[in-house]
Image (cartoon, rainbow, N blue to C red; front, side):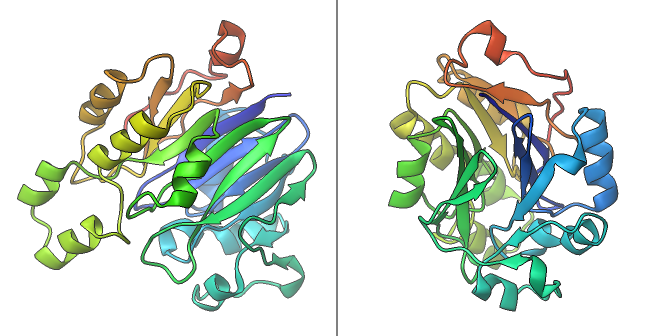
Length: 273
């Protein structure tokens, strides 16, 4: 059984990732409106009724902005830590709220979802690895620096959404105030292109077939720059630059994703950030 995955949106204007099988699916974060979730899933021929749960990484608005409207229309369980919920400003129906703890897998149908901690300037940030039949997909965004949890899970993945937020030179010479540049470059900020590439080169498993470069800065990065940087070192891994304006294609990820039957996207929408 393969996993179908897509970035519905990623960036400071909203983050939402789709991972599913033929029977069920989950969303990681809901930082875009329900209207956009529906619109983008419809374009990809994905059935929103297959979504059985939403998992929240942390409380920043670009990860939770669309959650309440989504739940009003589709009342599915929301997996969120107690601390994140308390600091989110969200008012969720209690019967929909499920807490989670790191390294305790949660089963949603055939999907197994494991949370793990990361470094970011949020109260209780986590990332997730989603697994099915020994196929692993990881979500690695909003990370100041790769800790041992991130490195370990990245090394297990057949596909990954990996933050490549900024180019060092563009950030250093850009118009952002000094305090914001420090925040972005701090251990609890975001991954640079160089940091993401180092993680990819040092920890990429031989079986990683797809890498979705995610959460690119609108002002401090360039899709073509980061694509070229990674493609020069990608080997057999397909590089997809995920967008803040459009959804990526749906890709089917299996344990033999290097074969042509697995590597073809379901759609042909590959837009820049």
